[in-house]
Image (cartoon, rainbow over all chains, first blue to last red; front, side, top):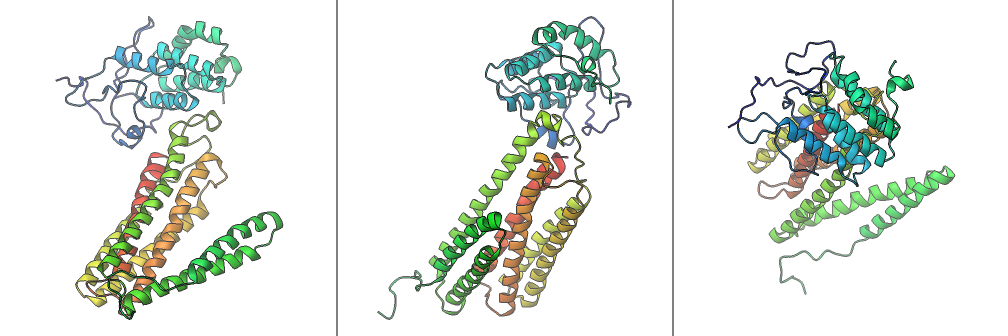
Length: 175
Length: 261
């Protein structure tokens, strides 16, 4: 029986100021390519999460904090999402749905997931969504200002290969 | 042959199906005339004919059932099936609009900012008037059940009171919703958000008006002693329709007002 190790704090989704301390987030981060993974927890107002079904391209493993049942590892989570975006004939709706679901989680996605998503954007000729993904990732990092530059650094080869400019390069990062 | 040897109702010839069909023709072609030539005459004529058809057709059904005794148990069973099938078709009607809403909101496009609610849209607070509307409709579900039990128990005065209260609650909902429509910071033209919001809630509001009207007819009939404690299918059909309207609202509230904000 696996129990989620950190105390489960059921929190209402969103409207939290980026300046508010991440009391309920446990982030393990160094600058050397480790996980930027906060503990995923089920939103108290389940309506939003329940409406976002699991990406149906892969087996739905529970990554929620139940008192029993399989708990998905971080690697399994990443692999599942990389697979989701790697579907060769992914359609525009699935891309947007996947991104919205992913951004709804209480974590910053790993570079490999974002790489897979950016490549899906390329297959779908959707540059707008590719740049939007970078904006969303920056927002997800919240007060942890070191995460976004790190991810851009990790994704640089892919961004160059696919010809994706960052919001900063385009000057649209300022309001 | 003076008497029938079966319990079914072979309806007398009636002009109303024809007038109803003609009304449908005049309304649809009238719509096209309105769009192209700015005249509402034909459409207005069609609508008038539709109202006359509905009034006379249903009046005749009441005459056949309540006054002529044609609504035997098997006939009533058929009417029940009919109402259930009709409500089922309405469920599918709304299912389409919910599909449109979820298609648009689960995967918002870049034009909307990739987010839901879309950039620039200030949704209504689900815990203000929409929550009151939910309470009003749920309460009306209670009062219509109270009315049903009153009818079954032969409590004439209570039946009239609870049915009247149900209708008042229905009007209150319509009034509140009209206020919300007037005050809303977004319109039907505001992208897919506005479109899905107003089409789904708009059709729901139309069904509330239809349901309230149906209940009002039942109130008039109850006052005029049409219903017995054993036989009051017209009322039951209205109550079923009213519960359906309530359930659709609950889905709208949860999906569009609450989750969608």
